[in-house]
Length: 62
Image 1 (cartoon, rainbow, N blue to C red):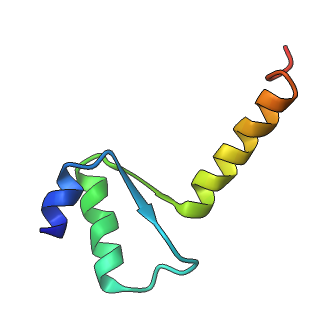
Image 2: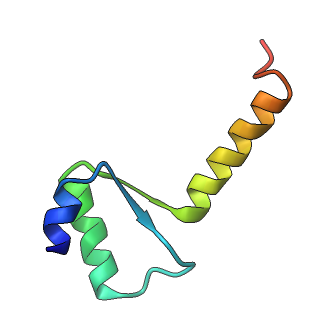
């Protein structure tokens, strides 16, 4: 069932600081083969934080 859910997903988000479980590494490998973006929760929060700063300051400077 988990593999079926992964196949229907657009993004795989890995939560936690260390990727050491065989199952997690396997899911990341499957996501790669299916061209599904894999990222960490920290990565998403970093991007969202960066976008919030740009909106707050009026966007990127040209």
